[in-house]
Length: 90
Image (tube, rainbow, N blue to C red; front, side, top):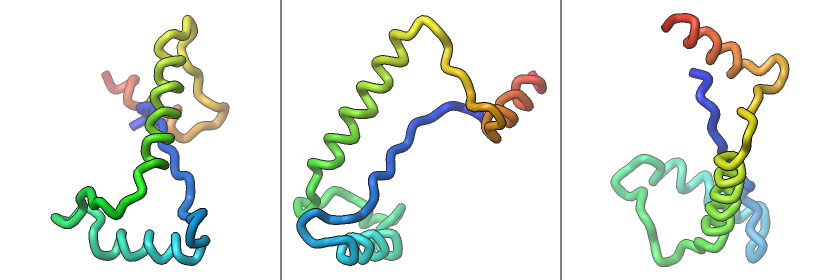
């Protein structure tokens, strides 16, 4: 509904096993585990990338929280239109 958010999807190309392997892992995960009881941490997971993404998101959020100007929407953003519509209904 026009609420700003940050999301990073950095791909599924494994440095160790290649792009095909990464894509197979992604598909298997989404088909069998995503939002299922089995969707949980596993010691086999390489979490180094998760930590890097968390640090990037923290840094961006920290910088935004210390800004003196309010973030602006890109011209023509569909999300700005949704936000404006929801604000007008208040």
